[in-house]
Length: 223
Image (cartoon, rainbow, N blue to C red; front, side, top):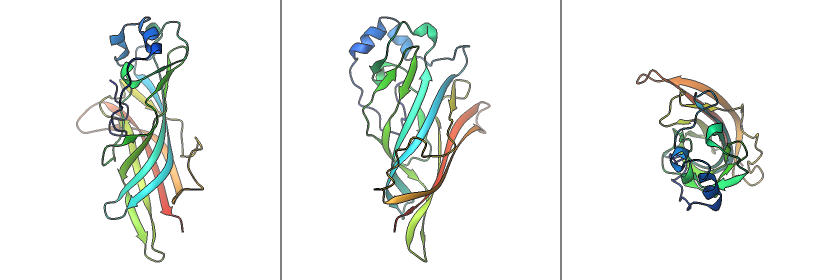
C-alpha cells in the first residue's frame, strides 16, 4: 500500500526498482513487502510520527485556508522474519507498504517537495521524511484594531483506513519546533503558540479505536 500521505501529499511519482531493492527482494518475497507489517508479537504495527511546520506561505482570509510547508518524520519496523541480513539501503515508496497518514482538514491535494525515498536500516527499521506543501482549513481572523491577519489551526492526523488494532500511531511530541526547521527569520507569519497531542478516537460508525495526532497552533502576520 504505497500512498503515504495520500491526502497529505500528492501521490508520489514512483521510481523504478532500485539496485538496493533487488538485493532486498532476494531475501524475501516482493508481494510480502506490500502487506501490512505486524509488531514482534503479531499485533498492530507501531508507526511513530513527528511533524514540523516549515513555513506558512499564504493565508486566505475569505476561504479560511492556510497554505503551508510541513515536514514529517515517520518510523516503523518490519518483522524480523521478513528481514534478512540487510544493511542500510534506499527504497522508493512503491516497493513496500507505507502508512496512509492523512491530514483530515486538508482541502486540496498536496505536493511532495522532497525526494520520494525511504531508508531501511539494519534490523528492518524503516524511516521516511517527506516534506510537503499543503492547504488546510483554519480559523482565520483579522484583528480590527491593528488589521493584523492571523488565526488558529487545529489539525488531526491519522490513518485513513486502519484502526488502532492494525496501525498504532504514536508520537513523542508535545509541541512543534523540536526538529528545528521553522524559518523564523524569513517567515511572513509567526507561530505564537502550539501543541501536539496523541489521542484515541472512537466513531459512531465503528467499534474500533483510532489513534490520532492533534496539532494545534495560532499564528499572526509579522508587522
